[in-house]
Amino acid sequence: MSVHEVASGVFRLVLPLGIHGIPSVNGYLLADDDGDTLVDCGIALDDPAADERDNDGTVPLARQLQQCGSSFARLRRLVITHAHIDHFGVAGEVVRRSDADLWMHASTDLDLGKYEEPGIAVDRRAHMLADHGLYGETLEEASSGLRDWMPVMPSIGRPSHVVHGGETF
Image (cartoon, rainbow, N blue to C red):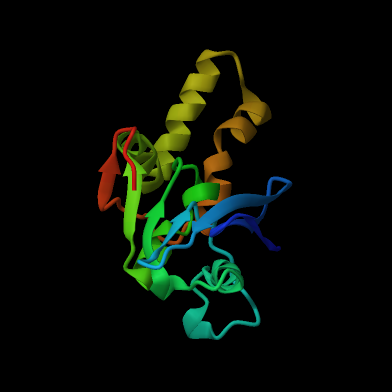
């Protein structure tokens, strides 16, 4: 995975996924002398070459930050565009390692609730899909996908700064 400077001080990070045939997701680093901003952070992935104490799922992200001349220590804020696991999965660990502010939209409360109680979320989805005519193996496959993603979200990040739209930083 590589990093590309797309504008002066703006880097596109290509973060590995490898789930459901999706190879990667983009994140962005906005470099600033007063502290960097990371926009989206990907999922937790172990690195067999990493030291066990640092192998909290953030190693691939840490390596890409380093390629930009940044680090967790330089992060001032983490902005999540939306709370799908591929954009948000390692947010709790990034905040823990960096002490950055976590900016999320107020409507992400629905997703946070789903991640706190994935069994309930899967059951609700199954009922909704059954009401729309799915059944059997098709229903099970369509409703249980959330369980595939939960292992790549080691902790649930909690916003320290809730946005409602139109904010600037």
